[in-house]
Each structure stands twice: as structure tokens, then as C-alpha cells.
Image (cartoon, rainbow, N blue to C red; front, top):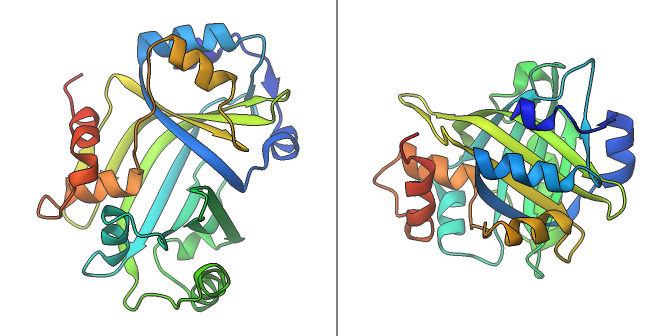
Length: 251
């Protein structure tokens, strides 16, 4: 992936935040074979810039997801509940920064993300202030309380590059090297593909249009839900059977 991005102009973190701080957004996700990804970037070269910090264009991420012992949050997503949410800490391993994040699904199928700064030392647990923050978000959005028994459920790690379109104020994240962990298992996935997420304020952006031309269609995928299904084979995973197979196909 690094070679494909080497010809793109650089954009700073401050510019990324100014151009595409999309906290209410529509996400479209794609599994893109490496060869197709190279062609995608080539076609977007005149529109997109790539985030660069201290000469780096690829950054290590770690997310710790929280759920109940019975996987209540996961089950809400399997059942496509209108009021469903995800809770995680996200660590930016190269910079040492960390945040606590709540992702809600709105009535218009938009993803609404709220976050607060978090101590990296606490990224594997739910602190009192984090629980209060989560409760505030749930009460405001759904009029509900925090599910009892939330605890660390699984961990995802990967490397991410971020592309920004200053014209449409869109963003595209590109993830490789995905690995899922829980207390007893580790699974590496997507050996030959890039997980691309196109993030726009609503309508499809230029990246989505190019992917359509390249005959790559959006897929329904959640890293957390796919990871939970792979790490816990006994869980019902009907909505993601096809995606789970794609994530684990041989390289």
C-alpha cells in the first residue's frame, strides 16, 4: 500500500481536521484487492492528499471494544436494532494518544461518533468518567441507560493511511494488517486486500464513484462484529457470513 500512496501530495493533521472532521457521516466500506487499490489511488491522484506526520503516511492503531459477557452490544447489531451502539478506546500507537469513543446509529442510518480524551494506561478498562460520558450520549440519543456489565471484549490492531478530498470535504481511510485478539485467540485477516472506508457527509463521493467503475461494491461490515464472530464461533453471525468468509480467504 505504501508504494501506491507515495505519489500523492501530503496533508498535515491540522489540515485533515479542518477539512474533514466528519463526526456525523455516512460510511461506505469496501474490500479492495491490492492491485485494484493501486488503480484506485492512481485515478484519485488529482483529488486526494494523504495524511503525513513526521514523514510517516501509515500509522498503527489499536482499538479495545467493550461488551457484556453475553455480547449484548454485538447481538443488538445482529438484530439490526434501531438503538444500537459501540464503545471502544482507540489508541494511536505511534503518537501515544488515546481516546474513548461512542458510536451511535442515527434514525437516518448515519454514524454519530462522540469522543473524549483518555489515558493510554486506562485503554483496557472502562473508567467512571467514561461510563458517565457513555450514559450521557445514550440518554440524549435514545433515552436509555448503559448496559450492565460492560467489560473489555476484544482488541483490533491494524495500520491505517488517511486520504482527504479538500473539494468534497470527504475522507477515505485505508487499513491493512488487521489482527483480532481476545483473551485466548489471535486471528490475522485480509492478507491480500485493503479495507477502504469512504466517509462523506451524505451522497456518494468521487472515491465511491471510482470504486463503482472498478466494479468494487460496498459491503456491510463492522470490524467489531466480524472480529466477535471469528473469535466466538458459537455466536450467531447471519448478517456477516459472506463478509467473514471474505476476511479469512487465503492470500
